[in-house]
Length: 257
Image (cartoon, helix red, strand yellow):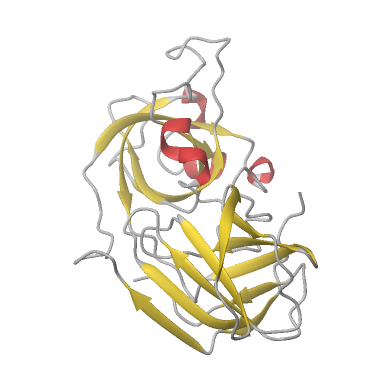
């Protein structure tokens, strides 16, 4: 499946927020024990792409501060975009002062049933595990450790700019990757509207992508996005202009709080 383009062509002209709960703002959670490993090398080339579909992580703004989540946290892709603070804890390989790193979930660390969960099968359910990029891992511990105990907590995602929608598909099928999501960072539901037509509910495809089987070309596109965690809904009006093209990325003016 094609990776989203990194060109950002348009700004949304309007955005309305509504919350289904009294307090939809996401706040940091409690520190919890887990373990962390790393994959790839110092260039983080192996982290590009990934199960969330963010493509080139440098170009899409995520950089090397990323993690692949075990199945328990990945939640069939609904964990994509979530943010965590992690610090090495209780290992001689930890750097002095226990520096805290902040990472975004961009990939899945799949189970390895051929190995014991405590000896190689680090991402086997129900374990909570972070497989970090090597640059991120090396900011809190010596890479020779391979695996270290950590404390982690989920935190709000701080993003610059608005929601980004990378469009793929064909004239009868629209596939939208949602990126740069602030607040809880995750997405549960999406709908799309072409011009002043009716809202079309999009189904979850994989990772951070949602799809609609409809002919939507020739008119401006608006999107309705709901957070998986807070249920906060954002309506981004006319994000993509009437002459929008597949393979391009369009940016809304405002993000989740």
